[in-house]
Image 1 (cartoon, rainbow, N blue to C red):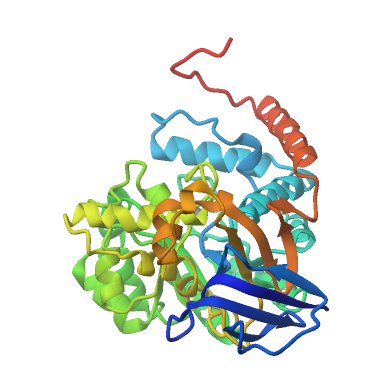
Image 2 (cartoon, rainbow, N blue to C red):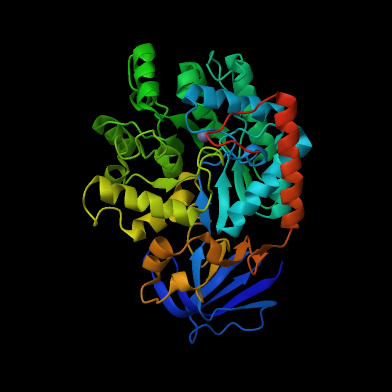
Length: 457
Ligand SMILES: [Zn+2]
């Protein structure tokens, strides 16, 4: 391991407990951890192996994407017309996903990870949809991103044609995954407990999954309350709304991360707050006709102290993975919905994209802020660009004006993985060509095609 010094950065947005913003500051990294972050004149450590010039740079913690199906969408991105009904769309998704071969998943994952890293995301959590975990995790390890992975299970019949397993078998799969992937590459890859959704899980599976998360000191994640229809169906079948039901079973808790949690009522927000459960909001997926502002109660959750983080969802649900754009969207949606510009300030959006993400994954002692003792996951933005100028309070510039394209350097675990905007572990152009070929091949062999509003000649 080597040492890195970020020398005289014009601005460091630390997200530490005091939320310090340091003008003209330096950061010293040794063996993958931050050992100093100070005003440049105060920091005396010299002689780093690598020195990053910080003039005109804004440094932030690495962004954390807490809901990202990493492995399937890039080869078939953008194929779906907007008028496909949700269940039809999801059926295509699972059909295409299950048709992928391990080597295809490797390259698809590598490209998705590249998109994340290049826009400043240093950590993501996959909710269990990687078919060949071995291939997906190899791509993650090769690229150098931080990740939490799992293998999702259900034990009830479902319209998505997810494989229905016996409850015992499902629990066994979850535990095997935890054993195999819990602590790879010095903790850079971890595993969590992934039950696809309470909609398709028995009470027994939900309870046992939570017990596993407790026993292995990790997090349980579930897709919950994504659509109004889904919540209505759940209530009709189980007698309670989804979050009420989870609370009733004792399955909510500090190590539970609910993805989407879009259609929730006041009582459910109270249950989340009381239990310490965390939520990941996927604004770019929700905003595509699911009622992000009609149903979404994220400002209320934040007011109650619930750690709300951000996720993109799959590249075909969101279409973009840029965390800066996600933070912007999460911020402006609720200002508009509440007719109040003071709602969801940019500082809160930035917390959602960084430290709240770390809380959601139980990694808040390790990442999410630039603090002494934490792992060195950080992003260096180049501000000598029109969209960044002029700068007086860089949080506003970052969240309102910039996007991930001004990311210059990305450090994960004390290693530079993106330099001058270019990934260091792969030739991006070659990778794009390869993934395009994979996509063409998958569509051909699955016989999937669509008619679009405009004809392609
Ligand atoms: Zn999802």
